[in-house]
Length: 127
Image (cartoon, rainbow, N blue to C red):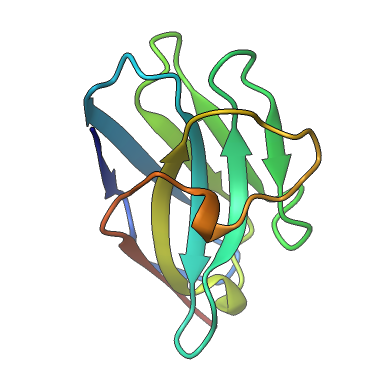
């Protein structure tokens, strides 16, 4: 089992920045691919970004490409989501998630593909 814990959410003005962290514990030797999702009020949970376990290959949703960066340190834990040029439409609960197994390059993962989830951290962007 892998436990995930997010931190770093909060209130920021439009145009500002936040950095979210996701710390894994438990069976951290598992080869998990780390992913961020978000869910805005009344909307479905949507993919934001992913970084693969082995080569650190990244994938982004079109809506955040060029503004958000997913990264990790050499220990592969924690994983960060640097969010710049934030917009009110980025307001959501951000969830860290992880999955094992095959990664298909360029294929956006779905929530059902995830094996582990954090409890989420709220990001609010004011206009």
